[in-house]
Image 1 (cartoon, rainbow over the protein chains, first blue to last red):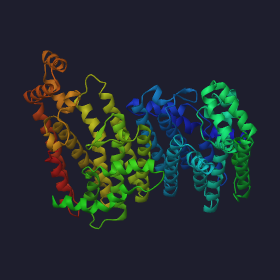
Image 2: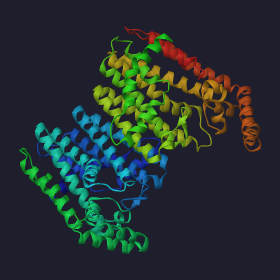
Image 3: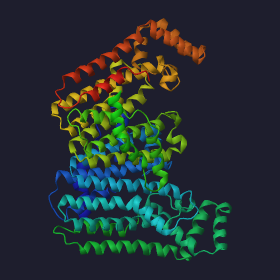
Image 4: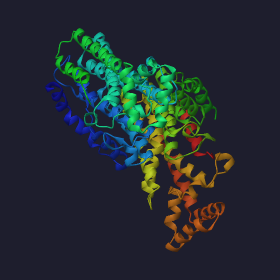
Length: 320
Length: 320
């Protein structure tokens, strides 16, 4: 993990810079500083740098600002999504609306979004600005689809995959594409890197869903089985559900009224295993992950591929 | 009002265009279409065109997109402010969060904000993008100041004037400045027009506060006296408050527990009149309005000043 570590170390001053948030009144800046300081893997800015380094070695000011912009934008989406989803915790800490209040969380999020565009204006590339806007629009559409799926009886796997593409993958696609553009990539390569980001994102989210049911609490850092208790219509759930006959579906539903939570989780997990849903979800995630690797091999970039290779490998083998 | 009418008629297709909001899922686009369709004076896009016409006659695609962007941005701030302020009504209709729900209102607002930046990217002028960002940042700071003032015992008039500058005036300043830049104004003129917009905005907001207490319901289109019942620390309120001795202050406060709302409003209004607060608020508004007019005379623009003159006059003499 030396290459990724190096990228993260390269990013340190840029991350410290966006956490600083001087400015007044403090009441609107402190929540921004707070959410940016909660950590996370910083995988998106690392992807910006990794894609840039496929073409150029020395960072420009612009690529650092782009890396800051994507990390800030990611945190903006978390901040507002947490209000919409009524989540009390984020990365083991209080969410902004829980620690302050909803009005503060809405407004701080809006300001953080404006700061994203300040960074993008400093990047000063209109093509990248337009790509960012198209991505951000899709992300909002994905969030609405996600919220609507909660009220929907049945969600198909193509619908689900499209939603996670919008909600997770397009931002990763943008990170690689825009980082590559700033590195001077030919437009053909930039588009391939976007597609690569989409594959990474889909694989990432499928593994995320898998780990929510089959991960280890100690590694994942949250309680296992949340999606099962919510009957969240993930790929994993759908694969199981579509393999059950009418009787088995009724039986599964009745578990929710007759059993304690721990047993519901255990019993649904065995159904996910028996029906092959567990296996086919891992397989699907691996399929996207392998697509990513082969796309990366195809690139005719002049720079160092090791950075992005390591990120792809890390995301493919993650247990948290 | 022929000149302003002409601007508003020039804007019609552009406004219809932003109301259309095709796109899917409908659940996130319909609220955007709804709030944009509620009307309002469309004064901000008209100001963009009026400033542009100081320098050029034929509209460019860019100036129309800029006009769309400011109207969309204004509605974005209304949409999110209404959630923060818990307002059930906007322009006599249900607010978005009341008609749908809070999550939908947050997300639709976020998407509307992204659409603003799509328009700005199409305008394609990085200087304007940066000016917009600086303005939007100030507007968020102003909204936070406004919310904090509600929890503050005493707000000074300079603090209040700064807050309304941030919350109302900077957007009007931006409209004139950016419209002028697209028209090809010398940077000296563009800065003067920004200052002119600030004066218009301050005058506008002071009159707004005045009309909230002394307007006529039929003309203003809302119940009179809301600010008084909330003890909102406007310029008008502060001017009264600072003229009262300790005894009169206690007496005023005790009204709120001993009298019905209608009488509280009437009694506080007579105090605003007796102390000269009513007069000095009108005077202050006129002072800013006269500044606007003289700034406009100073401009050495080549185009038609009549458009902007009419807007300045209209805002100065408004009763609603």
